[in-house]
Image (cartoon, rainbow, N blue to C red; front, top):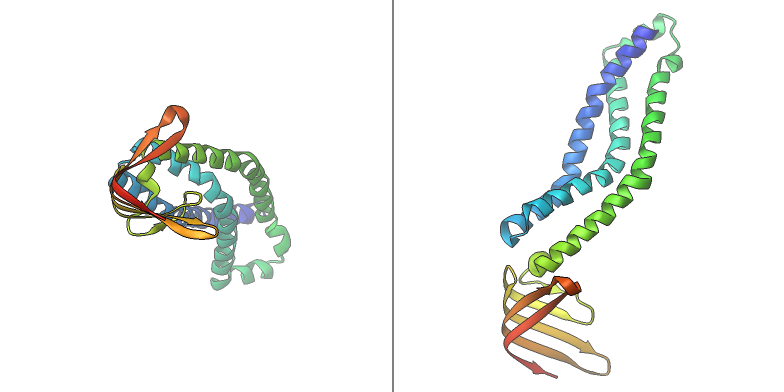
Length: 213
């Protein structure tokens, strides 16, 4: 029985590792594309982006570990059934429930290990990532903005920017809806974000513009 249990756990090990690696890669892929875009096209520090990637891992693991356990179990049992090994084990008079007991124990251990992951590591990582995003926003305010799209990030304002190069803007349109009054429209040929880190604020300087109400 001990030999069979060890064999079963070894058969599960590689499917679990492979499933975990694939799931983590897939879950990170969408974020990696956006984060590396910040480095390549927005001039954001590679060190800050690397920290963000590391801080994403606890959140990804909280979903990937349970799915990897399920995938490894199904793949292992499926292979044993396909090779008629389960039939041979049952023909030997071995109780399958007792044989699968180590799998249940491993599942419980990993579930218990996920408690600190979800209770401590994940919230702390999310909090730290928000601080880094704020830091990026103060250093490179335009990093999270896309040219040619309506930007509704700023309260009470809708902004449309035709061109963005680092913190320099070109052909800026700002719309300010006003209740009971016509929408205020601000048009500027050029603009620039001016970070003020000591006050945790960012100013938008508009050049060669006009305002219509």
